[in-house]
Amino acid sequence: GARTQNRRSRAAAGATRARTVTTARLAARGNAGRRYIYADEESGPRQPMFRRMKRYDAVLIVLQMIALQSWYYALLGAYFACCHLLFGLTLNMDRFFDVHTKLSLATQSAFLELAGVLGVGIGGAWLLAIIVEKSRKCLDFAATLYAAHLFASLCYSGFAVPRWTWWLVHGAALIGMVVLGEYLCSRRELREIPLATIG
Image 1: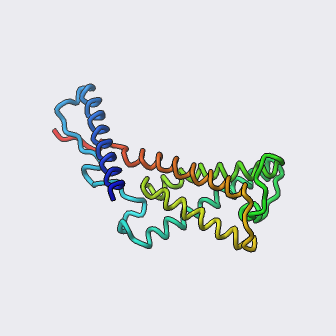
Image 2: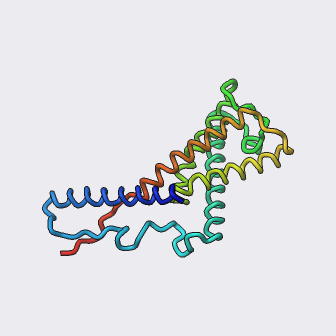
Image 3: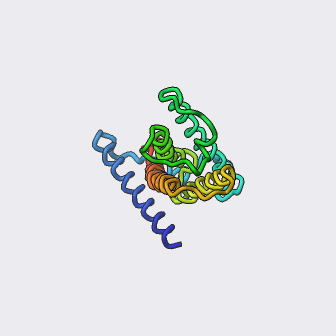
């Protein structure tokens, strides 16, 4: 659509500016007169980490989603394990999927869970930059991740209605993950690397 075209235009303009600045800096160091070949000029846009698959391959999307979901729970589990060692926080599946837990600042246990959900949500932005790599896909993947987490939590809790604090904290984590993920992915997309010189 028009929004996608505008994003591509801005990305192309940013890449052009980056090449201009890089060339000017190299020229100032005595390398004037040479033509530099950049990564995006030689091989096109940056490819996703699963390079051999097509851009819209359903298998690629599924693998990316599985990797993202797995690493999300791995980070959350590692955080709770650290809290267990440092603060004696009990470890059980309720920490991951119980929607009845009151996430607040009232108790140490509740505070640690709240910090974990928010912290891992922010850390998920790094996962988006590594696994997804495309800023325009961050919202879709992050929303799918939390939708799957919501479904798993409902199944674990007997389809009970989550507390309002659960919605608030996970909603804030989702927003942070999307915003920071798009920023990190945009920086990766605009990054220019001189590969060789001609002349």
